[in-house]
Length: 133
Image 1 (cartoon, rainbow, N blue to C red):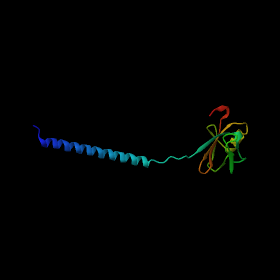
Image 2 (image 1 turned 90 degrees about the vertical axis):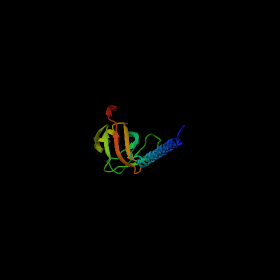
Image 3 (image 1 turned 90 degrees about the horizontal axis):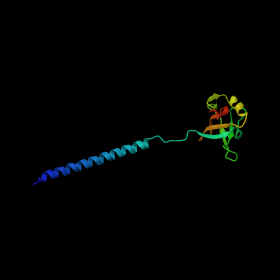
């Protein structure tokens, strides 16, 4: 014959183990949800118009604003220069005067980077001569 106290003990131990497992699963789930909600929210820091020198009006000197669009008939953006705006030909940093001089040589690809909230120019990047980037 079986001992009734033994079955009762096994049932109680099994119940306790299942209860602990549920609490452990709940705690892990709560930690995972907390970690996910604490993650930083992603936002757009910079946007780029992939344009051309024939679609961007570069002023004589860096200052004020410029007008740029991605294609003929596309929306035009008015973007402002500031003291932190940088200029590149390919990967090489250059002065604004050198960028403007190179841009005047023909229709070249010009990438216009800006902050979307403020519409401040961060970078102007002219494709390097010969298509090298």
